[in-house]
Image (cartoon, rainbow, N blue to C red):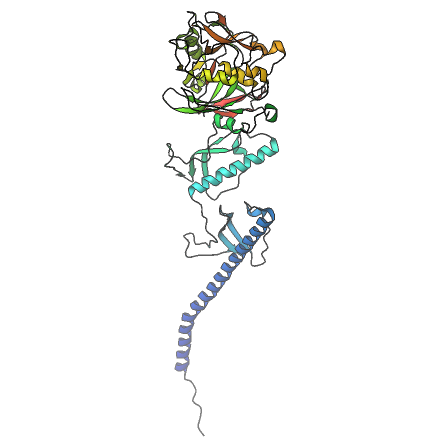
Length: 485
């Protein structure tokens, strides 16, 4: 009978060595496979969570007809492994960005990312988009604040803004209408440059100049009747071309209760309107025209030599000399040279439109100037007449305000007030005489008189187009406040 041969000890040892070698080779492979399976499972968990967020966003959009701006507004239905991400945000294009995610507390690694974390989605934001997002967040926060408090905050840093994953810092300017203007912006420590701007910094939004702010509030051109558009704001007037100007569009305050009060030189002034002005060097731009609310305490002659040539008149010399020098420095900075037209008229009974055409025309007394370039002058007769326009008072509008005003119970012009119920000079000379100019007689009706007579003075000027309104509503108890910053 044949006996079975058993393994020798050496053979058993050899088998064990071989098995050990195999386990050393296979075990890491198995562990790597297990790790990769877990990574894939974790990745699928993050993907599943991301898809749940996308579905929640779609549902939100269908219900609200708009996308949400934060995750807090979403009802996310996800039942897989617990997913938590350090950064969870909605991109400007409404895609989703998740980073540094954990599944059941374990970080989900990604060898393709520098930080080693798994990122779901792509953060598609340039530095300019960061600034843009920051600006829009500011606007939304300002609107929410205004809705709650019926005013804008004096300090924007008190506002709660959605947190961005990069720090944005800018010089912040808040316009009177709540829009935002940003300059000198940085994202992190990097300046966000814009080659299209002289200062090189990226600008978000637009500085709302006083001109743009007021014109934006102007009644529609379709409003041609005062009672149909009395929002206390400006009305639009269009004029044909003349020898000195092209066709022009003006914006004027009319009636007796416009919101046109403004603080200038720490005094109460009134805004006549917005006009296209030439600076004397061929540049034309829209500017705000203002007039002092009350006459100066001082009275003087239009011209002490009894000559109705504005460019050499004694009143011109005073207004652009001693008077100008007495203004505060910030007010002086706001005044820019402008071309004032010196066309004359031959009587004191003319309609607002015909009077205006005379004023900007070239018909003058023999040898007189047709225009003058300077800083401070006086109102035109038509500035008074136009306050009766669009049905405020047709009789006064059509005859230049002659025999209108307080004495006839027709206090329909804001230019009249009880502090001005005496004569004050106007800019236009009388056409047929060398020594007479127009004035507002008793503050209520157009007249003319010898220029060497003394009368009241209401300085009138055009503000720089760069002037901004920093606050105020234009009401008498809340006048507009001006600034150059």
